[in-house]
Image (cartoon, rainbow, N blue to C red; front, side, top):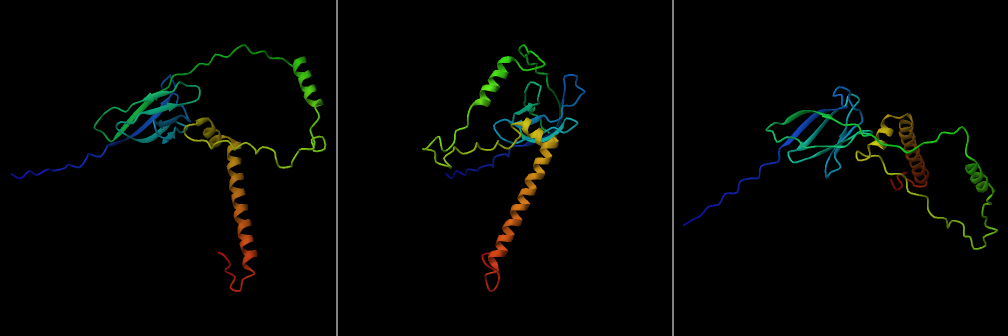
Length: 200
């Protein structure tokens, strides 16, 4: 007796395109800059000025929706036989209770005294510290991590603020200067070769 086995290919996991709007509790006002991230992954999007977003998810994915000043919300797409889904996500405001705040027109005497004491401290020098070795200072702290979808505050600041845009332009200028410097160094080095190819 001959038995024949057939292996059927596993059905590919169907993806759903979710287009939605993140709204305030009044269900009319959009929330710009809200982050919509797939749980257990770094993939996500940010809502635009009208609170709209577009993201592709698998049937089993869960979305985390966050915005500054609102409670985070977990959204699980419904198991529907569709390839596109339109949703409105309403976030609830998150109230933060602050402690008592005292507003004064000038610093307290304790703060003034502390500032004066700090000013009177003498700076240590190499003469007073004979065992001091120049260059033995600890390295500077590492730069702040780049903003990502997981940290929407830094990302929004870099996207929308004047300082963020200026910082981006400065980084581009520094990269151009570095490239120009390398090109000049290469030309300087290559002029010593007969065929002017050098190490290019």
